[in-house]
Length: 250
Ligand SMILES: Nc1ccn([C@@H]2O[C@H](COP(=O)(O)OP(=O)(O)OP(=O)(O)O)[C@@H](O)[C@H]2O)c(=O)n1
Ligand SMILES: C[C@](O)(CO)[C@H](O)COP(=O)(O)O
Image 1: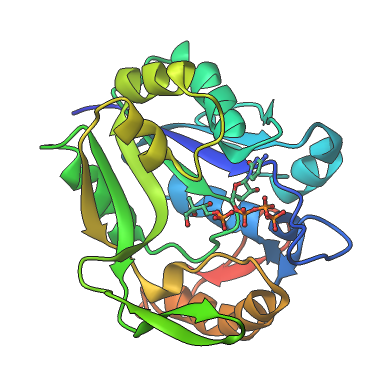
Image 2: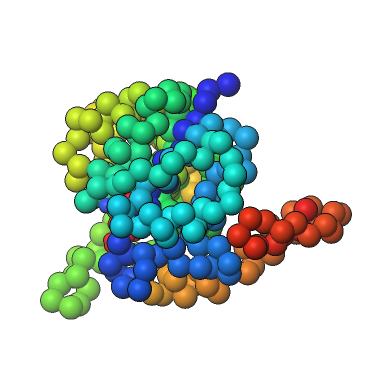
């Protein structure tokens, strides 16, 4: 079975949210978004290695966020760059020594990614060198003209990109090394290098915390998502105290 490396990009500043600390470190019912993402990927047997990519000034935030996750697959965090693409590249360079067959790249700012979406992206990599989670655009689209609705934009065939975005490791590393560091996501980098990328259905649950409204939504959603996770094994009522003081049913 192919080995799967995970890059969690967490070096952003969260400027559009404008909170006191970067959004990936804001607590959502006892665990911040970065920790939630790390726990989700550590919960997958297919995960071989995880490298968090962080801002050089966030080492203390990161240490607190990941405290107690005692798992050899969780590699030391590496410093990110000015752009998301630069941060991804640094994560990939850190994974190179571990030589994974595949890599999944995920935003730390998407705390509620369902395991099924991750598994579907990995499955698509069985027949494609690239795959991304995405959702079709369902609303009508209008081009703005002077504050009003101008020309309509056809929505047919348009998809909203999410993460994880997964790739053949050697191919996406080479693509990032050839890239100028400006791509909005790894699909842009991959396509520039001629890598075919499959669309895999994402999830509305897998939204990115970008604005204050998104953070409010996450703070409202988190208890429901956690209850759902806890109810996964209702026959076993044991309460497990997790590192960092969180609890869940076992
Ligand atoms: N130089 C950067 C920029 C972004 N990211 C990460 O890439 C993901 C993209 O989400 P985004 O909402 O663009 O994050 P920010 O850059 O933090 O947000 P903003 O643009 O509002 O500052 C986030 O997990 C972010 O931490 C990163 O690792 N390195
Ligand atoms: C890859 C991505 O999640 C695509 O939605 C990306 O991080 C988007 O970042 P943006 O700065 O909000 O475009």
